[in-house]
Image (cartoon, rainbow, N blue to C red; front, top):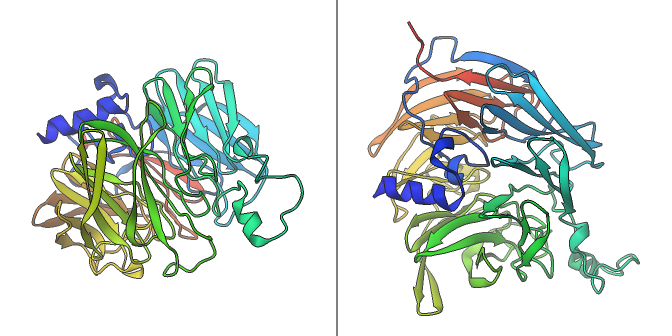
Length: 453
């Protein structure tokens, strides 16, 4: 059953068996956070995993995508350009690059997003809102859009300056920390989330950039940094999104609940909506399907974890909250479902009583934690071969845990990044026994296969 569920997710997202060892998008194969690779090392030398190569990168948080032995990184140069860099996985040698103008600065400045790569195209969303479809063969942009400018409404986004704060908030704008999302592939479409007053999600034809559909309003993008999440509930394919409807300046405890929306990926029609049972000012982690009729929503600032039951009867949808637990509180990185258990990095600062790497069952009941002794700040998490790879977001230490219902056994840890100013927050990527990690200034490729003797 577990094996069948995993491959259903891969098929939904257009990832074929021959590319199962790639990491072609945020969250890897199917966006699950789980790699199908096996035979990885269960211990490391005293000095840590062998470093295959190190590459200087500009400041930021953008993680890599890996496909067909190539690493794709959307870097950012001198607050003026986004630069897509293609590297050889084995050597780190730059194979080609493509740059476009994108001037501007942001709080927590620098790069943001993981590219999405299929056999023909690369799709990128830059932090300033530029959205591109790029031909893998020619390395050229074949079509472009802008997730703010292209979705302005003449009646709302008028040329004259806004006359009030309320009028300003109505207008299409860049989110507080820039566009932070990964494009989602569905059949011949690529789906992104402008989240303006009139437009929620938008689906483009991958090959041409022609807009196939636009969904209606699903909430605003001010503080919403969630990527569209494709899943199947009640036997129906749907894209789940989270967004805030409120004034972005409200404090976390005064913010209203976030809107949870389900959109038909074929038509853009909204199938159902609900709201979180408490404030969620900053939706960042993706939703997670944990059963055929269950969806898990997680978030910081006191929300914790919420289980929604989603049931379809005839043409009607019924959704309701079936559990809420504040014991596990995520913030940046998404939770992961693995062998009927949910794993997440949890924070005391965001209301979690379980901290560090936390494990819970599908009813939201806690099973174990690595905290309070082992904490990981905002570091990334991925799972492969029955093990969790967890980065410490301040120190650059990589931890390897063996996973079981009874606890997480620390197998190895090593400082793999310099982390001069902390903020080692970028997603990691695993392919062909190579784990690619980065801090604010360097990217490294680590050999996490067993040492050949």
